[in-house]
Image (tube, rainbow, N blue to C red; front, side, top):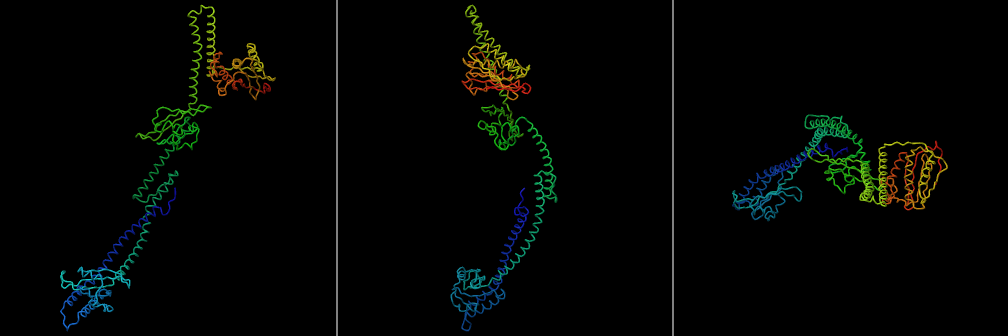
Length: 621
């Protein structure tokens, strides 16, 4: 399992979350505390000034409204005296933060100021926007602005002076005050610094506690992770340590219980898997299993051998594609397939047919989990069935032809042809000939049947093959017409062979008979034999019509004829060479033909013999 990086571990995430939550809480508390503290400090600063402003307004109103005579000081001097007195008092209250106090009449003319440097402004018109707004709105205005020279924050107050104590009385002037409020913000900054220091200390403690708290959660999880890794490798002996009875502890107990159950299930599954592997490996039939989408998830060795493919290219592929039936059937068709499907992999050289039976893997709820396919090799069965059908058809055809001929001639004889001395002998001769043909056919069939069932024995004797072969050829040479000539290509060495003389005589008779039948007038039939290793190779060659190359390999099949019409007219049953093959193979030899169409045919067959016991082999060409 891949190692978890430091920043992706749950331990670090828990600590970070814990710290972020604390930071968020402290940030919210800090913002609320700073705002409330700022408002309180500003309010206290402003309240300390407002407490004296009301009294000063009363004094200024009395002085402005007082009727003056020549004995009294001028209004400006009286107002200056009042402003100076109250300015001194306000500085004491506000720790010397009062910068300037001005008295302005309702025409915005400056009547008095507490700042000595600004005494030249007395009598001039005030251009302060806050004063105009206070006069026009007849209400108090204040703002905090930045002093252009000192870059300190200054609180500016413009409070209307009324002719009476009522809110509807006439405005007779404005009390303008500038106070340095920077000390309030400096005090606020000092408090914030103290708060930040406390926050930093609390974060350090929080990180330490967060690590301890996170370990109580992540340590059991880390143990369970290690146990899961061990379980993935097949080790179920390791147990998770239980740290307590809380939810994490209960999870650890449940995890240990799960480990025990998985160990039991793994043992059971492994035993069942071994049984299944043993069954699948020892089955002669091919077995293929798919998932619910038709992709192959299991295939045994016999199936791979039957399909002639490797396991790597089959797993994960659709079963219809692997079986080569994806053009005819989809996976849904195979699920509902009740009958077996024949898979024809035959080539021009050899037949190869498989039969596929399909069975659905289905849950009790009806949900389809996949498909099981069982493959059987039915090539031999199909070949036997085809041979059987062809055999029955050929036998029926071969028997029907003479029977039809006999019936026709017998019906003619029954209708009175037997009275005709010229016709009757001919009809009887044809009937007798067809009867003998059927007898030969039946005898050949019986002989093949005994060979197929191995219900016969070879009566072998050691014979001198040179003399044996000569006697058979002499017999045909005496009976043949002059249309063909015999040529013997025999070696001078004598060959002694252990064989059943009757069976081999029948083989050679069939081959020579065919050579004579199909040889043209004036043709030659050549005979020869030679020893090759531990086998005696015999040759019989003619100059007949020959056999097409594509048919040469089939002339030893039962009832097979290259030219059926001509062969039947010559009295053949189509079983002679088939019987010859069975007899030669029973002796442990082989028989085959070589031919070119129009240039004759050569039949070869071999017989085993002991060269050391009977002498060395000769040669012929």
